[in-house]
Image (cartoon, rainbow, N blue to C red; front, side, top):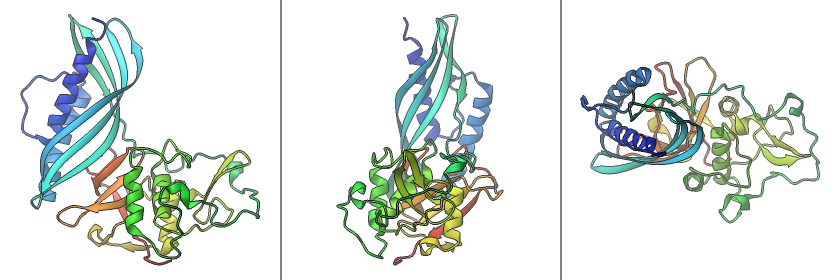
Length: 333
């Protein structure tokens, strides 16, 4: 039958659910024959086991809903597809059951041999890892001629879905977290969505909590977003790029203070990640909850995540050289 290969996908997803929470040696034959993937899978299972133990948490179960995004090739004996995997992982810590969610995308190549389908290649590039210099703009956009008749802060708070009431100079941490929870797996249509959307999403969440726009008209300074101007998107680099947001907050933007430990963070605070420890920050998250031990749980875009454990050791982007920047935003601006 033409769709027999989908049975192999189902078996693969069932195995992945098991691998997320059960780290015991597994002698059951796998549907995957990609040796690089199998080696990585074994290392990942060992790392996850140590990770949960270090957190004093016990994984309970994993549920995955798969969506076929596209068929890149569909020949008689070979199929290549992109899958979106909505993972929901439950774990226990301190007598409390926690739930986290994330969206992964994988590219699978399946092949039929002697009537049996197997997965011969698995590509799961870490979406959180990307060149910090990749920006959705062109060099000539650096200085924008923006009409001065427009009112500051150039953003209508009604687009955020919280009634559009100005909160003056107070940072409402609960509203920032609520916005991040509301839009964790979708995009507010009033804003441009980028291929690398993590920092754009964080900036929206901070603004929803009352963080004030710092409009300069220069893309390399301030923290601002204007939408389309003359057919072009107009925003500061710090609004949309992790490396630039890190510099802005490190310089005291939004009254931010750099903290030493994640335990010091509060709801609505920000973590920015340098995966290789080379000074190039590539990913941003916002604190939206805490586990039973008081450790922060975060939301993010790019790999859309909700209430994910803050250190990202379950991400393929993480390395032993990863450096974190913990930013506590001011309660009043």
